[in-house]
Image (cartoon, rainbow, N blue to C red):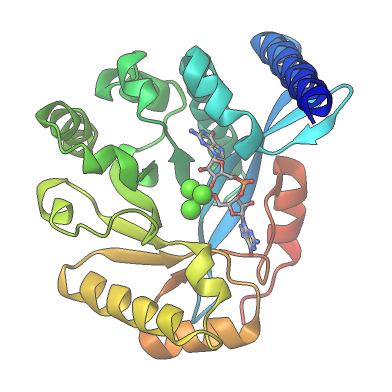
Length: 278
Ligand code: C2E
Ligand code: CA
Ligand code: CA
Ligand code: CA
């Protein structure tokens, strides 16, 4: 037993070492991803669920790794945050997406733009004036930009965060809370932070019509959003049944595979051109 214990300990150490090595390699790769042109912004439409009209797009980052294929953001954003690389990467996403949206404008497509930002970006220099100069460079009106933040940021409830976010608001930029409902549901922060939009997490949309807890939660969020005058977007809408339920309950905006998955800019334009609102 003692012998196998020692082997096991050895085995775990080797596995952990291997894991650590892989991580370090990936981290090294990420450092060069931007200059090697491996990052790409995909776009997913946000539609008015009732009319089907496309209202805007959300920018979603992809990493085309030469050996590992396309890596989804959940697998490298946390690393980018820990290493501080998110500063440069986040700036690049904003810049690229603004440029793209401006090109679509020139083609007669007026779309709002939603961009995800990490709280780490606050300490890495992303403030109102930085965003303002990007917008100005691409002649984009601040009212067309929505910055999406996760609940975690608001839970700290620091004056610093309020001031940071207020800076965006003062420019006319909108703020959305992403993955709403998954964090601590301390709703009091909604009053303290200058947010405009809630995005119901897709976990709840997935379980709509099959899980009574998800149903009541969605109903509660919809009525709360209405009474607080917050705009609402349901994420991860995949079926017509989900769309119907959401419309019946009064949720106006939606995003999900039912309409369109995130796609590269060129493909999204093709989709927009053949898309028929219902
Ligand atoms: P998110 O902001 O909650 O983005 C929505 C995610 O749901 C996206 O995953 C999207 O591809 C996926 N999705 C959309 N519709 C459906 C659907 O109908 N069904 C299902 N099952 N999934 C759907 P993605 O693109 O893998 O992004 C994951 C997360 O990575 C994002 O979650 C966001 O938090 C983060 N992220 C993406 N791009 C950026 C970025 O530029 N900066 C930062 N800080 N975070 C980013
Ligand atoms: Ca988002
Ligand atoms: Ca989300
Ligand atoms: Ca998410």
